Image (cartoon, rainbow, N blue to C red; front, side, top):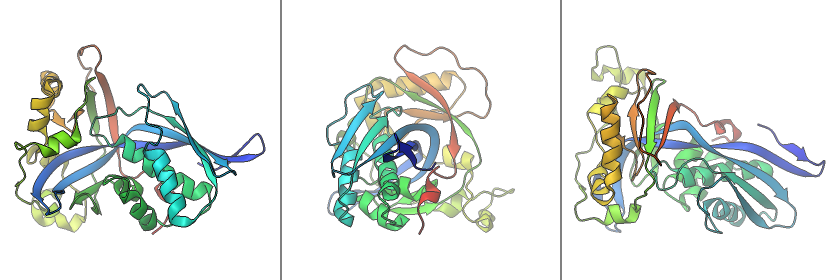
Length: 308
C-alpha cells in the first residue's frame, strides 16, 4: 500500500489492515508484586481484520470517524490515543483524520483495539514521515496496552512476561472457526477473580517444537511449532472464570464440539475458536452469534513498513 493523493491536495493512506489475533493458549504462571499477571501464550495473527484510512491534517488536529462499528467508540479510543502518543514522543505538529472500518468484535479477546492502535502508529509513522523503527514504535505502543507491541512486531509469536517478551514463531498454514456471542466479558473482572488459577507450570517453546518424530530435536527447525501439541497440551486459564461469568462461552464451545471441533476461548473472551482441518460445512448456530472461518497469517501485512 502506498500513499495516494486526495483531490490532489492532502496525502492519504487507504485501507490499512489491522488483523485480529487468537491466543492458542494462555497460561498464568504467576503474579508480580505490582499486581500484573505473568503469562505464557502463543499469539497468532488471523485474516479477520479492521481497516483504517488516514488523511493528513496540516492544522495539527486528531479526529476520528467510525465506519461500520456496531457500537459507538469513545471519543479518545486507542486510535486517537496512539496518534497523540506518537506526536508527543516525536514532537510532530501534523495531524490526521482517522477513519476506522470496524469488523473485529469488541470484548472478544481478539485484540481488535490494540491492533487498530498498532496500525495507526505504523501508518502515521509513514504519513508523517517520522522514520521510527519497529522497536521505537513498540515502546510507544506499550504505553497504550500490553498487546500493542505484538501487532507492531507483526509476527505470530510466543509471548511471555506481562506481554512484553515477544519471540517470533512459525505455524503451519491452517484454518480456524471463530465464534463470538453477543455478550462480552470484563477482562478486569476475570483477572481479579479469586477463582483464577495463577500457578500453571512454566512451559518452554522447545517442548512444542515441530519435527517429523515429534521429539524435542525439532529445535533444529528453529521456531516452527507443532500446532496440534499446542492445542492438546495447553489450555486457557481464564476460560473457567469467563464461563462462570458468561454462560454463552460454554454454549459456543459446546456448539463447536457438536460440529466435531474442539473449542477453546481466546484471550479473555468471549470469542472461542477451533482448528478446522477440513472445510466441511458447519451446522446452524443461534441467532446473534458471529461465526467466521479464518486463516492464520505468518506476518502482518504492514510489517515491511518499518525496520529494526
